[in-house]
Image (tube, rainbow over all chains, first blue to last red):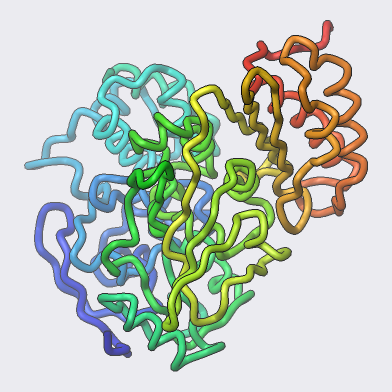
Length: 155
Length: 291
């Protein structure tokens, strides 16, 4: 319970163990981008509304912009860089490509990870459940129809 | 990085939590899901020298049934409550409310205890928990006390929790099998401008109603005048009695202008949502005005 000025975190990141020392006030998003070089996770609204900074913590989506890096200690974190396996896009990524479920691509890492989490907890979501789960991921190119078509193709 | 550095404590048990809260007084904040606290720190609205992380203290998460009550650990996330089999079975309206808070990431990180203790007025759970007659357990070094949800929030961002107390559990009396609850809210942002919780609780054939308004004032407000007007009125006779009582009660609510809308607009919402929530709880089909 001792107070810490800096702390060493150990967690599983994209399937591999990682150790990184951080300050308690470091946000997970900054540690991922600036310390671990994983730039796929985006800062956008910075207030948990837009979903561009989505990562999965123990399989569920969180806003890394408003999560302390310390919260990852001992947990399992998945970022967009860990979704493809062996150089092959996974089925969610392929569905987004095949249905052109993106325009500028800035929201896409969050969309892919939110979709991955949705299918983890509910492998057969209906249209209303898809919209409900993805409601917090905002696309400012207004490309929702193609995104929804991509997700529906996975059900 | 957050604008201000702080020291981070991750105690293993409540005794350590109490000691830290006692030692650092005004310089310390309990830290749960962080969905509200971290935003306030980032915005420089709040500043603390110490955060005490409650998430790894055992025994503060999960739901169980005990002596006719649903006992919810304060560190339970909204997502876990939305999907919990006990909550879904015994208080489905509260599960549904939990499933509609903000967005999926906030529901996964945010906790019911944090939500109640932060006491942001534009929140969904307080009105519903008050309507359900919930009580909260506050623990401190010298023991524990129970506070009715109705008395817990004093005003905007203010509760009766003492600085060295921790909210450990929320207890909801299991509603009678014949009782039904509903929650109706509306807001153009992720938070409710107004949320109305209604309960339809028939006892020996006599209908009783419980109605609480949330978000519109600094603390949840019981709409007693509507409850009294509807006392004994069966669902199929609610009609104009409900509409008139809801409109009159809404005009009395201490609303004020803010980002969520003007006071007049929120009173209008309160009247409409009261009617809808009561009708839904009473098992009536949604009523729409003819175009």
